[in-house]
Image 1 (tube, helix red, strand yellow):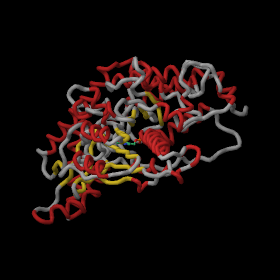
Image 2 (cartoon, helix red, strand yellow):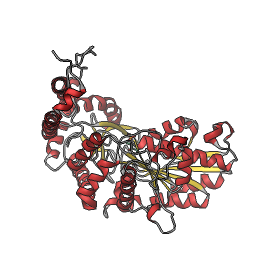
Image 3 (cartoon, helix red, strand yellow):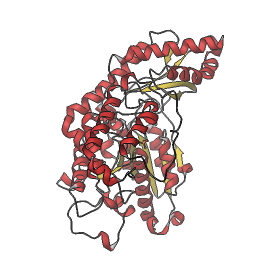
Image 4 (cartoon, helix red, strand yellow):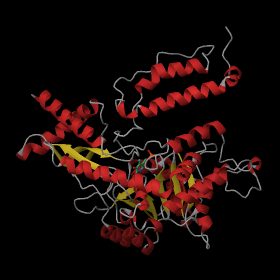
Length: 484
Ligand SMILES: *Cc1c(COP(=O)(O)O)cnc(C)c1O
């Protein structure tokens, strides 16, 4: 037998890629009927051989041992976390990104950096934010694609860390954080990735000071922030605001927060991983007003834009700061190319051509395509909320401002209802997810345990709602029966 080699596979590339395409099509077409969470998850029974089996047989192994046990997270009823799917144009863009195999952060040899720049410019326009390269006075936002919001929050943390360093007379990038003094960081409901980012850049996960929340909500109380900043004599103040808090989709009042930051010379970072997309729709844009005043912004494309993993975006008004914090210089990287050198803007010195799926999706569907996805998701969330109030044994735990419904199953009555309900939510969610019809993740609000349904997949439509309700009914029956 001939040993399988890349050379031999290359001779039959057309047939191989056609089969891979068929496999992808089959997966996409059956997404709505797959179990949303895979019921059986075991690693494929294989090991690394001295000789391989060739691409054709590797595809068979995928079909046999991997494909059946994947989740339908790209499908219409995966409502856990905040999870996007993949539109056809974005999928094509992602395939092509692999086929052309660029390292787009490398300068001087490809149009790819210009495609990144153009894609960031189109996203800025989509979010109604000034794009620095297009602005007559050069003020506005620019940045880079990242692995996700975690990556973007880490770039933000590096930027404001180094900004604070400069204000106290030290270069943190060169000298480390030991000499950094006088930095205070304020926030109310930061995403957990923000704490991790602060840890990564050496500021520490505990560096955040809690600002009081608006009573009955998760959002920061702007008055409390104003007082905290006014009473602080720290040399450098940073405020981390949330545009779209992950448990309920609540928004902070970014306009007031930005005004306080301006008054007290504070760096404003806004985490809008999904919430920035509110600015794509006239119905929801008011929620995200004021983000245009931020110093830095995080968002995700693999959530609501429905491009495949992984793709986040970091934007800042202080590109020079980012390019100092992330600079990577070597004589072999010198170029006279006028295109931006993204190697100086991100964590990676090599990365995937993440811009291409974004570019393809924006070309294919335009502003109205994104607006439709956003509005449809929010409409599904509203409708599910309305339906929940009509079925036995469920209640909403918080209002639904955008695309996330936070609710719980109710058990017992009177004084022990909260305790009993809290105790049974995990079992309930497990039973609901075990139906395979829907996938939910937990959420807590005001001391009450519950679960979240987050809508951000372009495929989700009205036909999915009865299936979701049916899963909720079945889950609750299961728990009641088990409880006896
Ligand atoms: C999802 C999310 C993140 C983390 O995003 P990744 O893309 O998983 O890194 C950060 N902040 C908020 C508000 C989010 O919703």
